[in-house]
Image (cartoon, rainbow, N blue to C red; front, side, top):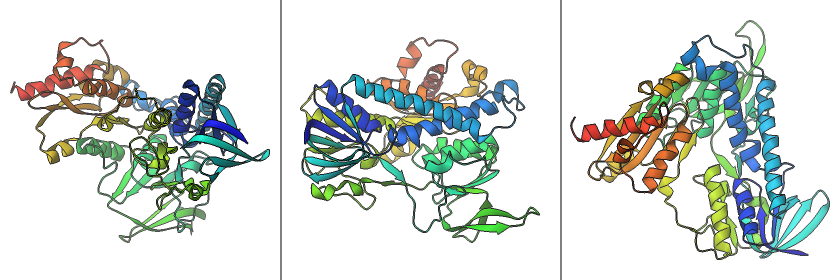
Length: 471
């Protein structure tokens, strides 16, 4: 039986960074992947494919240039699913090569197969070459999650789908129902609406993306309606089924969603995007004494240790925030703790940035106005409208905005909220200033390249400080 210092289960972002960090510390490392491709959901079904789809849609439809060249501007008149899938596949293949190259360069041994614990320090691998057993001193579980598929929903892979199957559709539908107004549902709803799909989004809460600053949520919902998306907020789906319809004069098969309110929705396809489910139930964790919740998620401490101290977990399998960016850092930190590396600084979880790759793009870091109000923290909001920024005019986006929340007394930054072009890049300027305890005066007193999106910070700082100074 081969023995390793560290065994990682899963090659998603948490597993990748954990394995490479362990190798950098001079440890012998094996990483196990049950699928026939590397990268987990990040590369194959989630982050990369959805963002590749978004970029392809924006480019081919000319949606991100209509503000400059007019509403009739379009790169390609008839966009096919093959046009969208080809870019996604190209990026995915490149990512597979990069991950494999990183493993090879760092001496990480990649083992294909399904892993299962057979004891506190042993795992059995069911691989294409047969069964094999490995022994390890430290373990990291980074198996991720899958889309939730409730048993009463008749998923079929072609008209009633999860986000995993969406990119595998044969053609772009004319109509779609999206169930779920979280990140995944909102992203795909706006991307497909940009393509011309008539989308109805059903969300049980009163807002989509309810964790965002309410002003940003309101602006986003306005943009969604402008794209022709019908929002059914505060509504819950009672049942979903395929039905025959002759409404258009010819018989066709549609998906019907009955809402608890009595409304009936019909469309060619339905995307079910309500939550994700863990997949750690098949790992034999009972052999180690590790417990998981009813959604197969693992509980960990601040060092990412499970209740068995030599078994760590990171990424989506431990729940919120379940971002590729945070998963990478969790995996790295877990391994550093496992091998006694003490120079890893504690990070402020309040400074995790959130990026939503919808149309338009949204990003935030720090507190929302609602949080500050609840906590009794005095603040002022500085606003920069994209229409005031020359670079935004050059990019054809005059509808976005950047909001900076400033402490009324210390003038320190408390939060940054952005909707519009470049939001997920732009947010890191605010993140850095917040992490270093900077104030709004930093932006006023420093020079920014012109024209740039970053100039939004200077305009927002002036706006907020002028309000505080009553000028």
